[in-house]
Image (cartoon, rainbow, N blue to C red):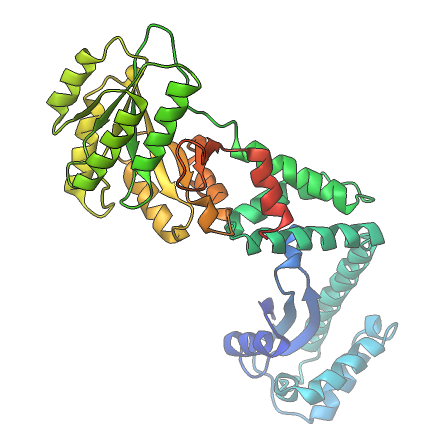
Length: 407
């Protein structure tokens, strides 16, 4: 006798699987629903599992009525609970698998062996059912926790946090929640988890007696030049740093003139560089400065040649003397941000700056890209005013916005 289990989304699909593999004469012995475990039970549908049996030898033809009578007469185990077969027989009348049951042979020993196998199967099913009943049912507190988790899940998805990161966070806190946790308890756990994953922001730190060369890279139109002007203003006015500006964005005359205007207002030097050799010359010229901020041309992440140009400029400065900041717009689509960050990851390590936060109601991409790249967060900008509309990213505020809404 062949005995197998089949799982599918519905009872009909499971029966069709059994029918396809075992044939029309297969007998369905048991039908049960299997619920998913853990936090994923919120987001996955239960499966239907059937247990089907098929006699390896095709029996000779007899009356179908005699089949059931012989099964009962040859096995005393079924007499203790005759409803097992009667209940199954009701199902048989409703399903073509049961309507095509094989006829029993005249060979008594073969029938006895068959029924013994069926009895063992049903006994095991009773044991399995008993074991299932030993597991305590969900308490009201557990149901409440799941409701809270569902609310937070929906909120993070609405704020465009990638579902895989949402599941990761909720999966990490699920088993640590107390049964009597309140919504505030659950929110606090998720809030702390988000802050930990965002990490400690890192911005430009000056070192006495050591010049730093800071490269700003990123696609066209994200606001690199304006961001550089804001940082230069902050360092000059607030930190009293000795600042110089370089621009390698020779593709856009407007960008050069814009940076020159800021340099004149701040009273700091500005030079245009066209190659890595000229950056090396500037390195010697500004060796007694605290920081040199370098604007680069907006590059297409699809152009290998432009990526190579950016890499040569960056590598012209020794690694211990340089920092690189990838400037991204918070309004860019997540799929495009993935491609952009992967492209620049091939060039160098970087920290992340997000611009144009004032132009979007969703900040999920900040969390997504941090998780994707594992790069340090640094600054965010939220307007065109120099030097006001820039700040070090506030991870606590970011976590609150992700959880509290986007209004």
